[in-house]
Image: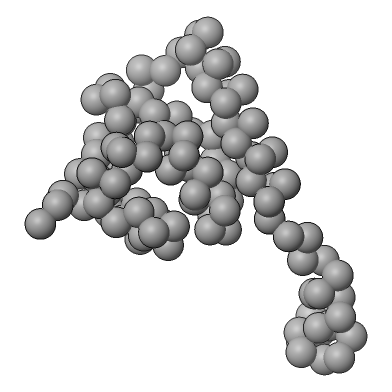
Length: 114
């Protein structure tokens, strides 16, 4: 049996569930994909982007503590993170129109007013 995602440095038990939603269930899969492809899959699966989570993943896959990322390296990772977020938003369908229609026909309950 392969080690869980949480066995990668800097990733905790919650990572097993989060990465599992993106179809990544083992540390071996995560390492084979690499940080960028794995993080893109998280974003495409609907996970909210979080820069610290991204660079903790990058550092962890390198066997480094999450807070080892500084200076120019951190700036470079920020640019990669922003590019991944942009790429994920480009492939994610815009759901505003369908949500508006669902609201119009009463599928989405109106917020409670105080």
